[in-house]
Image (cartoon, rainbow, N blue to C red; front, top):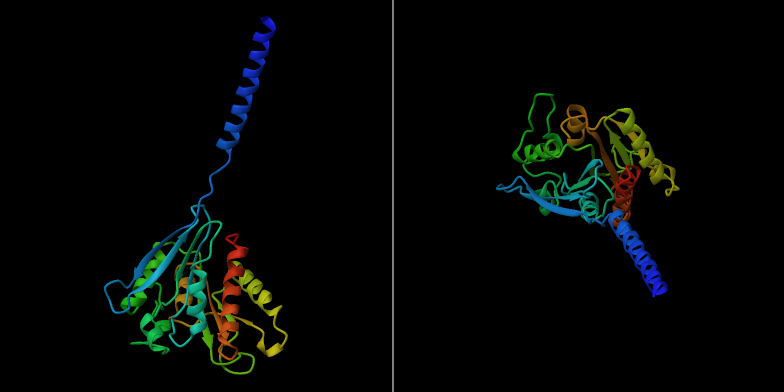
Length: 253
């Protein structure tokens, strides 16, 4: 009888240890948390109303904003941005505004009621010029954006023409410059023709979202310009590769 009792005690002890061990593992293992995506409307209640997508990883990290469609006749930017808004991220927030100037995109024209790429503040205490620009500018400030990529296209290769096609134009500080060089170098590894390689320039044009965000808000901001000469699929590939390089180097992809 004593042997049975002793055996029973040992079995109970083993069982309890096993249960506690598995309970500990279950408690220690963090549950997987999927990204959450919220859609907000920029310039709500106006003819310029356009959706903006906010993907939140639920984990601390940078806030990156990617904008396409500032000019409606530059399809690579808004096509690429529409893909980027569906990307999963490991940390931080990814904010994507695919069709910033929706009316221009609908008409496939560069502008609509003025050039959105000149409507942002050109002085520290100035406001944006239009309802659409003010709404975008307010979003950059509201979500405390750390990095901003504005997707554009130029009419020619910058190494052959006066266009800025095939370039990255950044508002200079050392951190932004390091990232800009990494993006351009990564892209150029896959381009064999020298004049088709991407170039690096400083200072986005005054009145642009990237210039205002970099100069007045301290955002790491740049305009990314593909040339409109290659097939649209190639241009979109360049845009998404640049965006992926940015997010990957920030540990978000």
